[in-house]
Length: 72
Image (cartoon, rainbow, N blue to C red; front, side):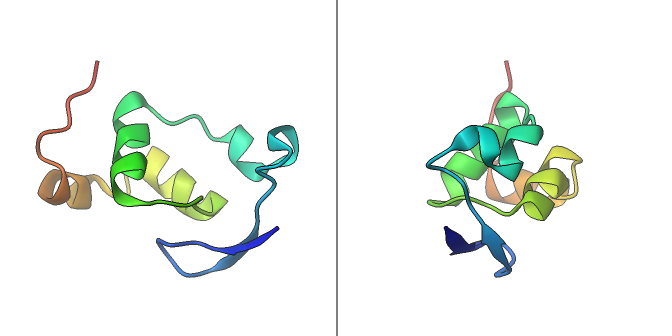
């Protein structure tokens, strides 16, 4: 299914009806990153954005937007 990433507005193919076929299965987010995505977006993100979040590209934004997020 075609979707628009709510973070970067790029178009991507989402396979949420068959998760093993979806690109996002290859990205493992930390508990903190998963919480950040859950708190800030209501739909799937593209693989590029998931990788940026995983690699800490959004660390500054997370600090400002979600200062109370606690990792376990």
